[in-house]
Image 1 (cartoon, rainbow, N blue to C red):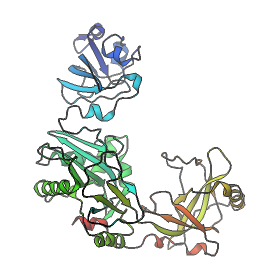
Image 2: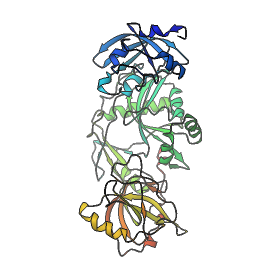
Image 3: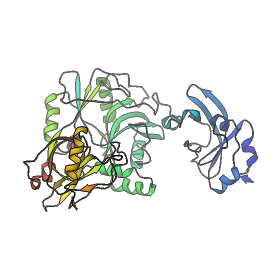
Image 4: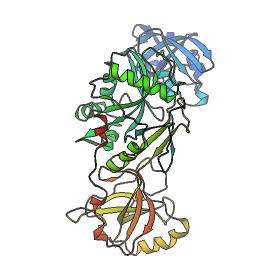
Length: 459
């Protein structure tokens, strides 16, 4: 049979190889596949509608295998090797880095950034922060707001734009409006460190960010128009002149970032410069004025270079607060019949008890007696307003999917760092039981106190 004028027999010719999306190879060794040794069932895969690339010139390097793409056979310019994605930007002279199959999956950032000619790769890890309890003081510190969003490194080289998450995953597919905004800047080359946020009625909306991580392109397109994201930038790693600034101190990088923002971001509502201050009193006021919606404060050493993937040059201080909550239900552990987590509730103005989060930091020695106490109080409905669903798919604390409603008579005091979208953003820390507290006094207004929006800092 023929595919795009090429007979399938040519696909197995020594020195040439075929790489396509969803194709199955009889030999699992990537080296053999790329060398054209493995046989490919071109007929069956053609019926399945897969795209195919003819490739050759296999070159070994310290990073793995470099492949030079020659010719597209099929429909369109998106091709991938089975189980190991490879996106093609051009129809010829493309270079991609692969790791041998025996070493596991391909480094996502290696092949996506192969076409970019920037002094740092897409696999460049963002600087990490240690958690501390108090804002450090001293002339060596610079303070910034801690934005409640997705950490993101934005790369641009000519027409190519990439958004890379803190974990090294590509975010461009989920935020097409940001890719377009970065591509429209007059600066043709740069790498910036920042945070993707979404504002809803002058409030940060983390739930709107989570909705973007969706498999359907049509839904992402709809949401990108309805709730467009903003990139708040706070560091410049590569300048518009393609100079690597990561080795410079923060004091130097911040000056370069402000020059970059003044030249290229003036009047831009989608890409904004994050404010900073070297005054401790100002940073402390941020805590006081924006205690509810602000995720905290970041403190960075002015005299340190960018510490890729490391801690020490940056610390984060979260605005920890406490709240009294009703225990409206609980979950057993996934492999035990002992309580693993308490489900927390708060009453609204109408007297409805809404599920707002959980706490799971229970002492092992207390679980047996607590389980017996809770089982005696099992009574539907537990929550009369918003009720719990299943645990998050990211959950790692061993909680089971089922939850059990309780008679609303128990009250606990918990510590939390952020309340948004009608619930605690993270798991809370159990401080103590409050037997003297009336459940009806545990109202949602204690965590929804009015305060200034962090977005005012961008004005």
